[in-house]
Image (cartoon, rainbow, N blue to C red; front, side, top):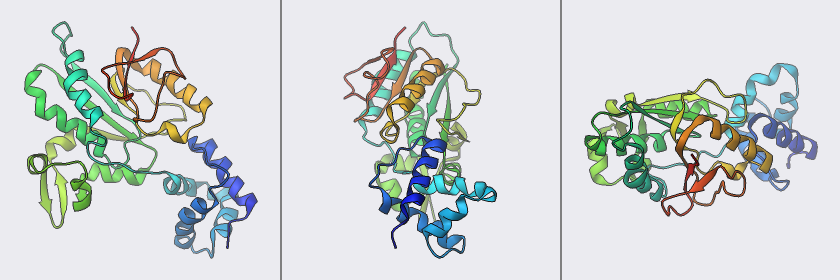
Amino acid sequence: MAIRQDNFEFIRDSLHKRSAIALNDNKHYLVETRLSILAKQNGMQDVDEFVDHLKSPGASVLWHDVVDAMTTNETSFFRDRTPFDVLRDNVFPALLSSDRVPGPVQVWSAASASGQEAYSIAMLWQECRNLWPTFNLELLATDISNKMLARGRAGSYSELEVMRGLGEERLERHFQSDGGRWQISAELMRQVEFRYMNLVESWPALPQMDIVFIRNVLVYFDFPTKQKLFAKLHRILKPGGFLFLGGAESVLTIDDRFERVFSSGGSCYRLKK
């Protein structure tokens, strides 16, 4: 049975308010498919009964699960590769020039899902840190999904997940086989701090960032939400800091305080000094 129109509109509007995810009016099937699992888990016959329950005052605790279910958590190690090549070959050298005062390089992987992006950044740093022995990397990974954050903190990945983006050399160097899964090294796990964060709510206190990865997220937000997000990123980035977006995303038509750099195919931007 198709979800009732009033219930679809309730989910669409509530989801936008809580997470800024903008659902098109033709996404009834997506809502039905993803929420039907939650309906069964909570002992309800169908999605309409579950959504009707969500409207009651005592059901607010379920909204974390709803946002989890409706969030797309597609990720992989070294996804799209080019941004990581730019990070290694251009961004790290630009940041770590001889006139920089020694201290931590602050990197934020926003919308990090199950951690592959953050661990990919940590791997690159480990592989070239001998070039900058006086500097350390402090890496924050945040996400709106507590389930994804738990997976990132565990650092355990399936055979399929490690085969997506990792070559044999990196797999052998940074992982150990563990009963059909692959466990990332303790050294890399110590490198990354995982923390819950909703990008469209008030942000907690964060350090000034040298680099922010917020890739393949903007496609889910409407234009006013993007404007607010870039205004916050402008404040959190250090002057001259770097911003990585998805290959199909751009800041140039939204906020003119950033400029595209390094011929990165549109993925890397720098905050104008």
